Image (cartoon, helix red, strand yellow):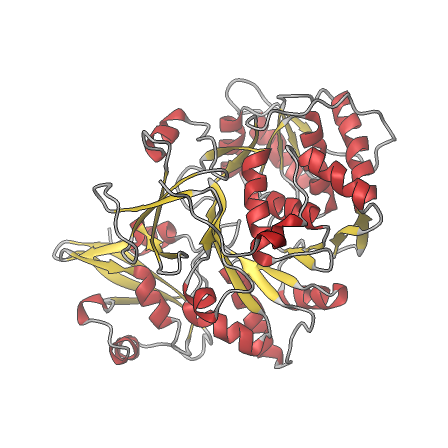
Length: 522
């Protein structure tokens, strides 16, 4: 099977650093540009250079080793987006530990599930009563033994880290858990190389350099945190860390530090666009060139809105916890590609589009996306979940629907679970959502299928209003969709208005399972 090739030139990737492990990548960058800024913590206006970061990592690695952390020790950490968790993650990488990052907004239920599946030896949490009491209470109930709850000291003395032994490229060093749109988080087993493959593809596609200033405005415990930090090391760029994504505060921080590369997910694009509309300033962030991200579908109309009003280009990607940055648009791509596709597949990634029977479908036809390649995880912690998700050839069944465009780029068309079957007719939830987002009264929308004894499923649109004082009526919704020539059988039979769509704590994806449970009639 032929492997796909990415459109960005090889020259763009030639200047990026590469290494067998994340620790060796840090060593290379610290030696090359020790005085350049790596991290900027917006909340405290703290700046850390590559060289200083390298030294802090070594010191913390020595301290952690003194606490009993070594190669193969499983360490979970639940810390907010700041400098400290980045230091923690690289210190653990230096020691060859296995780490299980936990999104800091997770509460008892999620934390218990993650610690149980990971069989963690340690859990590192912030030194505050809320996190400490929660972690201690959860730890005592973990089957098979309680992990040690640990807080980091405000500073650690200069200490000697143990002799470094380079980990095997294929050694599993990371347990990343899916972000909670399912009933039970799944632990994806990653290596340094599977993560860095995604980082390199993103760095090439975005054409990042040391002149860029990037940003992490989502929970650092998300897989995107490590991906982004590795990208910064490869390119030598600075990264602004945002602990709370409050739009007016984010805009102020981005302006203060001259951020050129922002984003996170579709929800973050939409929040910046809303802030632009609220203030009326043009451009909102003068230095901003690119809004990059993934993790959720991007409405086609959003590209032109953001470019016209915010003055930035959306460069969207496709990926998942199990296979980060599987495809990424190029910042130099055409308007058509940037608007209607999710980018070129990663070089070396084998991508298949298959129908419900598992047969390959031709280009231009939608089917399930299957992946096998350098960024795909090594299965799940639960062998049963691995067996269910991977086929006999080692392809990951993503559950996402997509097609290959004539230019070779991937267009994600929805989720298998988002296909609503009404009277035998397959209906794409995403198609209806795209059209409803064009209504001025609609700030956001989720279209779901609900059980119906006659139709099998009925189509329900759940809408978050632009202005709660200006409601959207059912006839108005129907007329809007009819005017856009949506076939009558696809027009929702039900409209629900909510104050706020439920979102997960990772990249703010809408949790449709909650909506289905809420609006299913019992």
